[in-house]
Amino acid sequence: MKYKVTITALLAACASTVLGNAQLVNGNWYDSAVERIMFTNWDQVGTYNKVADMSNGQCVMEQVGFNGSMSPLDGEVSLDFSACCGRRTNELSQISWHFRGPMHLKQFAFYTPGSNGAKRGFKPSSSERRQVHRHPARAVGDWVTVVMDGKTQSWQNPWAGTASATPAPTSSSVDVPLAPMPSSNIQAHVPSAPTAEKNPSVPAVNAGAGNWGRQAYYNADTAIADGLVFLNNMGGQGSGVFDYQMGNSLSYMAADTKSGSASPQVLANTLIEDNSEVIIYSDKPCEGNDCGAYRPGTVAYHGFDGSSKLFLLEFDMPLSGKTGFNMDMPATWMLNANIPRTQQYGDCSCWASGCGEWDIFEILDSGNSRAISAIHAGATSGTETHYFNRPVDRTIKAAVIFDSDHLTGQVVVLSDDTTFDAVIADKVVAMYGYKSPAPGPQVGNARIAGQGGSAGAVEKLTSVFKLGSG
Image (tube, rainbow, N blue to C red; front, side, top):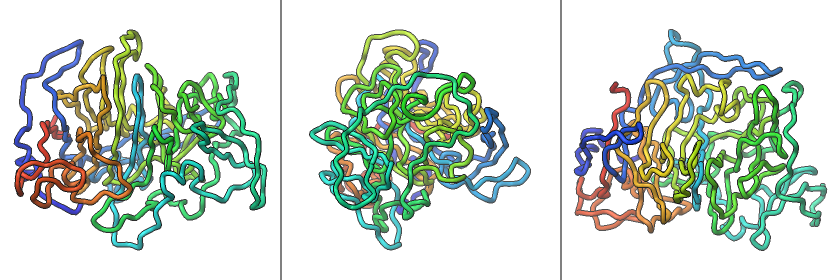
């Protein structure tokens, strides 16, 4: 970020930092409710075991090292890691987003900081994106997904020319019986990517210095899904693969979340039910070896990369009253994007060795009203005992901030009037993270209090957790 302050000054601004006495509830420790959780000292060194090969049903691992700001959930891992601790890697350790019900996901947005380079043109307006695919040129056989009269419809493009074609739309979901499938001689499902966006580290929108540009956006009410794709772990149902050794791979998700799909679908404006999981990746397909090793036959996309990045969310977590495995236990979390592309629920992934998970809002037992935040990444690990109040009867808006300048990651509950604009000024994002660059009663869409200095920061009850401190 552009507005740099020392960690000491940053913490001094947090006048309402919480210190309290945790209580043990259903096997987990909880302190008191807060509106912001900050993980500081996010600059650890470590290794993890990355999947190097999954061909022919095997699972070959190799040790790789990481260090640097926000690693291993940053963008490109630092290249100066000591050779003492495993092979160095410059692979993009991007992240995927995961949402488990019961939950309504109303909005999701991903932002990256702009630069002084030439600005790229912005994407079509919201109304245009509802009918127009963001990459107009399509080849024969490409899947076309549109929203017409409020309904998502998909079909394969049969037309090679430029004239309009009117194919009959197919069902939005195709069920295929789960049958054993050999893992050899299967190629990953990777739709053609536009040549202008083959490098996933180059943002599609450069908002310019002093601004953050929105690279991906979903809105449930308007059925917009731009710059992202919805997946789930139901391989073998329309897309992806299933076998008895590895189970289900990633697949495209049906709009109602209840099955896989043959093509990309837009998440419907509906309840994500108990123990149903929605996964969000960027819309940039993996090509060649640019995602590293992943399961043959899976649906494979790049995650969201960058050591400094911003996510805005709007969601609720209603009570369902159900009990049992993962019942009435909603959660939203991030994973190193390599994990779901290999085996999210199994041993053939880098998860167990600490390649990266950040639990953003997680309910740990059925019906609990407390949502914790925790990081699991080797030495970069910690569970904060302060918690967020579960939003059971209304949606809330929240920011998740990767701040590489200050080695901090933050989860912040925002005001209800926060908007998910295409461009957000640095000074507004700085306000989310307790770095107020200018005095005044209000800047942009972030409510503040006081006049100047640290008193100009957003008033939030805050807890600070120092990573690597034991």
